[in-house]
Each structure stands twice: as structure tokens, then as C-alpha cells.
Image (cartoon, rainbow, N blue to C red):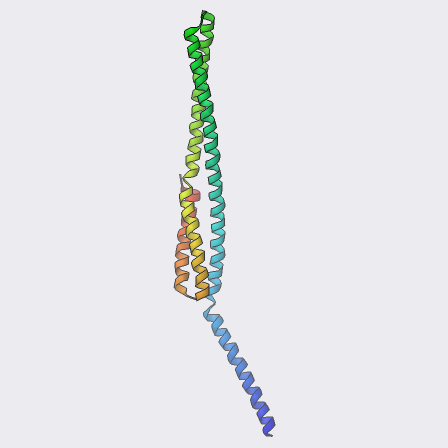
Length: 186
């Protein structure tokens, strides 16, 4: 009977060991359940960073396009100005009153066209400047969000809750700047 008692004792010991392991695993899972929230935070911060990067790129493209269009418009303005100066010279040197009158009409027309082209160039520059104002807050938001993601990742590796708090704070600041840069920059 000692062999049967020994076998029974071994089975009981095995069951107790399995039970203790399961209890320890449950306690560990309960202690580290907060890491799921950190992982979720990382995903949300990554999505916010992606949105910020896309919008920052869009505003950057608008800046470059408006600048190019404004430069082209100013070149067109200069061409109109040169034509007006030529027409003014023609009024001074016109041999006949008829040619003088036609050149005078050209001067008036070119002055009006210059004013229209100048107004268009200034509106393109205003659009460029408006799009450019979004850049600094979006850049700060993206940098803050990226650092927050890095801190949260280190938090998962080291299991240090203070890093999670720092990451959440920096992430909130980044999201605040993202919202400001997208909707409140005037």
C-alpha cells in the first residue's frame, strides 16, 4: 500500500502544484491587466499621429502650391507692368492723335489688369500664409505624440506605471496641439 499511497500523494502534490501555478498566473494577470490599456493607448496615439502627419503634409502641399501660383502671378503682373510702360512710351512718342488715343486706352487697360493680377497674387499669398500657420502646432503635436508612443512602449517593457502617466500626459498635450493645429489656427 505504500506504493499506492505514494502515487496518491504524488497526484495530490501535482494537483496542488498546478493549482498554485494557476493562482499565481491569475494574480500576475490581474496585477498586469493595466498593460492592456497601455497597448490601447499606443494604438490611439499612433492613429492620432498618422492623422496629424497626413494633415501636416496636406497643409505643406497647400503652402508650396500657393507659393508657386503666387510667384507665377507676380511674374504675370510684371509682364503687364512692362506692357503698360511700353504703352506709356507709345503715348509720348505717338505720331498721330489716333495712335496716342489707342496707346492711352492700352495704358488704362493694363493698369486695371495689373490691379486685378496684383489682388489675385496677394490672395494666393494670403492662402499660403494661412496654410503655413498650421505647420508649427501640427509639428509639435506629431513630435509629442511620437515621444508619448515611445514612453508607452518603454512602459510596457519595464512595467513602470509612472512612464504610463508621463506618456498619457504627453499624448494629451499632443492631441491638444493636433486639435488646435487642425481647427483653431486662424
